[in-house]
Structure formats: C-alpha cells, structure tokens
Image 1 (spheres, rainbow, N blue to C red):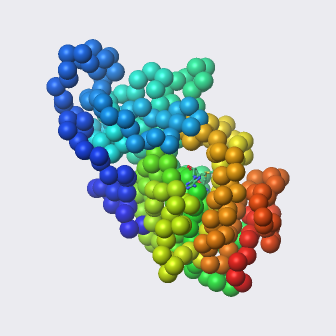
Image 2 (cartoon, protein in one colour):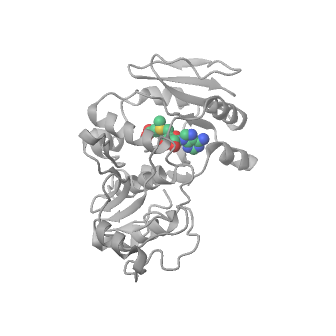
Image 3 (cartoon, rainbow, N blue to C red):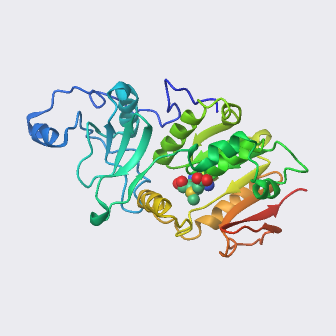
Length: 319
Ligand SMILES: C[S@@+](CC[C@H](N)C(=O)[O-])C[C@H]1O[C@@H](n2cnc3c(N)ncnc32)[C@H](O)[C@@H]1O
C-alpha cells in the first residue's frame, strides 16, 4: 500500500475544506458555547456541516472525533478537520464517535448494551489468526483463489469494489493479486487504512500490504472514470447483506456498521454488478451468503464456488 505511512496514517481522506479555528485544539470558545464545551470536554466546534453526507443511513454517523491518545493529537485533529467534525477529549453520552487511542482508530457507540449500544468496531487484520494465515501465503484461501481464476491467470489486478474492513482485500493480496480497495464510506475507509497501517508494521505482512491501494470512492463512479488501460482484470463484490456473521462480537460490529451505512437502496447490488461486468476484463466475483440467491439482473453466474458460510458467484467475461 503506497499510502500507509505511520506518520501520516490517513493521507487519502477527503481534503480539508478550510480550517479556520476548527481544528484548533485550544480554541477560545464563544460565550454561547462555553458551557456545552465544558460539559462535553470538546476542544472545538464545527459550525459547517460534515462531508459525511452519505453516512448515517442507518441512523448513526459519528458526530465527534475523540482523541484518547494525546501523543496522536495531530492525527486526530487532521481527521476532525477533514471530516468537519468537532474534536473532543471524550465521547458525549449517546453520540457515535470516531476515537483515536493508542491502538488506532475505532468507531464507538458509547451507549451501554442495555441502552441499545452496539459497542465498537476497529479494523484489526492481525486478529483471529488472519495475520498468521496471511503471512503463510493465505493457505486455506483456496476458494477465493479458485473464484479469482488464479491458476490460469496468476497475479491479476483486482478491484475490491466493496472493501469494507478489508478482509477480502488482504486475502486477495496474499494470493498475489494487486488490489485496489474501493470504499465509499470515509469512516470505514479511515478504519481500513488504520488497520493496514498497523499490519504493514509486521515484516511478514508488509510485502502483501504493499500490493494494496485504498480509494475512497463510489465503486461505480470509480470504474466509470478508469482509463481503458487501467481496467481491472477482476472485480470483487461483497455487498452488505444483513445477518450474515453470527458471533456475538461480529454481530455488534455488523450492527454498528449497519447503523453507520444503513441498508443499501433497492437495486443497488444489481447496478453495481452491471458496472462491474461492463468494466472488468476477465471476471466478476460476488461473495454471497451460502444460501442467498444470486444478485438479480440480466445475467446469472457462470460458476459457483460453494462454502459453509459464504459462496462465490463467478461471472466469466474472458477465459
Ligand atoms: C459487507 S461490507 C464488505 C466487507 C469486506 N468484503 C471485508 O472483507 O471486510 C460492504 C462495504 O461495501 C461498501 N460499499 C457498498 N457499496 C459501495 C459502492 N458502490 N462503492 C464503494 N463501496 C461500497 C460499504 O460501505 C461497506 O463498507
């Protein structure tokens, strides 16, 4: 990943639309907001709306950036400025927050489970044995290798059009693919970059992380803007699908992401598949829950790679 620089962990975030005193950690609050700041511990207030316009489709977009690691105040301030969110020392009750602590970034719902809180989500690519598996050449990831058609065409250029927290992205990169990880939510992209930045510090993972580039964009627009010479060999899709992951932790993570992103508009999966089919050179691979129907539309998959929890539907464009 060319942009995973530990000193500038989030270089691809949308650029700041002007600073003024917005990112200043020690502002001189106006008399009218002094009380509120004292109560919330906020360093600053952003009068202008956040560029997170597309976020919160499920009722929750982060309302504040919290710096819980004073040594990283500069990074927290940069993100607060670019997302046009206030910067605070701690989350407000009940307000979804983007928190930077010594482990990196997380999206936090500060409510307790009894209040309906969904906990927190961060991108940890090293947890659950994934890091070790990746370091050993993604062994056991044969199904994705088959779906991507790597036997006949190793090392393809893959666009992971729905990158999310990057698990498929890193597995594809571990399988030798050059991957563009496209994620339209600036918040999810921030978490993803953060996870990649920490993973790149592991010498066993650094070479595969170097094959990943993150783009914060809507994949359809991104594909349509690509010059002919840069069209991907394979487009990988993993659209949101409710209730797929069943563990308690994953449930909380899923719930929080659904609060952030909301349900996709009807027909969006089909539109994304059609854009992928129009721009991929060799194939489109769609990850589906094992028993879900294929994405509707004009075309049915040419082959399926089944699995216990998920299946890959493969649409072949050129052998
Ligand atoms: C189910 S998650 C993907 C999980 C991912 N495969 C992983 O391994 O972590 C779907 C993600 O796709 C993103 N997404 C949905 N439609 C998109 C689009 N048109 N362009 C870019 N990202 C999109 C959502 O914001 C969400 O983060």
